[in-house]
Amino acid sequence: MSKTSQTQEPLSQLEKSMDVIIDVFHQYSRREGDRDTLTKTELKLLIEKQLANYLRHVKCKATIDEIMKDLDMNKDAQLSFSEVMLLITRVTIATHEHLHDVENQQQQQHKHQQQHHH
Image (tube, rainbow, N blue to C red):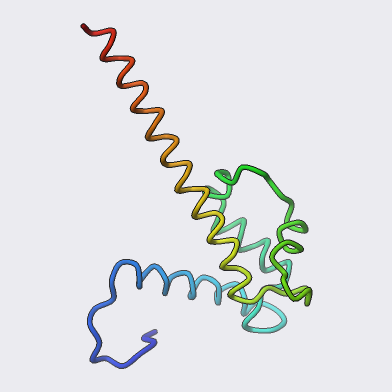
């Protein structure tokens, strides 16, 4: 599903990731109602199927209703792509922080182990 003409450079890793985000959004947005927004049901499915692992890294847990209310900037009971990107951004930031926490814990354990080996 090429978005532009065939004469372009190959897509970068980041550009491919952006395409995946857009494609996944459309897999869910086209299920019911407006084809370019998510209903609460579509959002719930997307979260359950696509964010099950990484949503655990978000510190304060919220219900689907709370997430929907929080993201729905224009209060139309549907989420546009840009509104869903707020969630994806938050989860990505939380995951980035989680990975650093894990890295730091591993380094602490490594230092601790080295101290006992001398």
